[in-house]
Length: 246
Length: 246
DNA sequence: GATAGTATCATTGTCGGACAAACAGACAGG
DNA sequence: CCTGTCTGTTTGTCCGACAATGATACTATC
View (cartoon, rainbow over the protein chains, first blue to last red):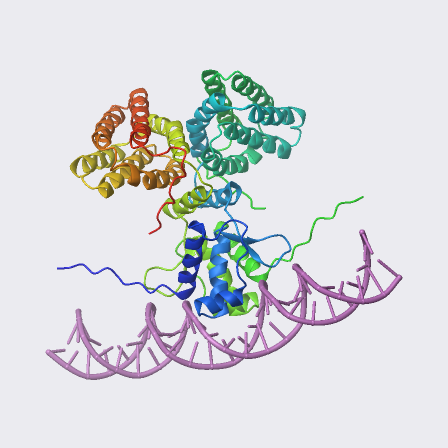
């Protein structure tokens, strides 16, 4: 007996969306190109403008098109790490990912990232990293500042790998870490200073292009977060709070 | 002089979308809940149905709502790893990520994942992993089969960590790897057998709960891919092909 | 009584047309 | 050069409409 697969009617707005998306993936439409006006698209696809608009909302939500601030025409865009990250973070939060899973994953990847950064860091990326460390050392008074400083440090390390996939992979994790950190950091005061110390050691190792030491200190660093959570009395098996959207 | 930040008029369809999204993030609307019909939403928000529909397309594209196959009503869903991954993969491809960056990232994270899997693997996850290895050994004749088998192996290892973030982090990478593999695997024939050997060793190490050996063999495994690319004559600095959408 | 057919209702997909708001560009006046 | 004014374009939103089809209840048939 032959198996029939269910035949699916794809609604027009979806066909239009995928058609335009294909053009973008395809590079026929390149970043920054303005999209034709809705009425023109409606004419070309021979559908109503409402249908076009629904398709555009899909693409907009996928960050394949956007309109520049205060302008009217839509332009083609490439979704960046930031755009992607909160979608992933949001998804993870909806799956009730726990605090434990977050730092377990950090323990998995961050040491390797630090080691790779030590191998590939350039003069510029080291300068950026140094700036991030200095900024944290300078002001980590409020929980806000401290948390932002932590994030920037991790971002600078990831950027120093010279690999563009790494920051994008890391970013959703950071979002979750930060959401959890904001709750924790006020309850575990000594943590803030240990963070600064670890940052300096990781920085030194990367400056010296020493992958092994960079890996070790990053391990310590991430373990510190874990200890912070334990000390602060947070249940590490509680779901991580949903990252706030701006 | 005080700085004024640009005041932005958010269009109605966006406000509606974020309002509904908030309800979902918020768990007021939970997975599987049917969404009210469009006309009712239009009434509640006091906007036209067209506006509601544009908002729904946004949510649909964000995988926060979907409709089951062949049904009419929309239901609330949680975006899963698969849904997210192709969005991320697509984004990375649009950024002209290179083949080199893909395997560099794999070299970064996969060994650690294998080690973690060796620590936390349960009887069930080991069984699943064993099945994946067996399946690859059984049929990797066509490029299609071989590539699919490679993916399933990595997925099974990631699942064995017991950490739900890991598979979701890994999935976009797999998409890119596979897209590149399909081109490579026919040009580097010996690769296919080495893959099977490495898989067996990683499996054995995880079965024995030996993180060190698991890490080492996974390192070898990933390096094999790298070699495969080099042997096949593919320019490792060429952009990775966009992962195909289904 | 279970199954197949039928009637009815609800809901979505798409259409056409309409209009106010506001952006873009040209143009004139100080 | 800056400012105001005008005009055409494009978007955001609305209204009303209709066919197609999923959902549901009811009926006939074996």
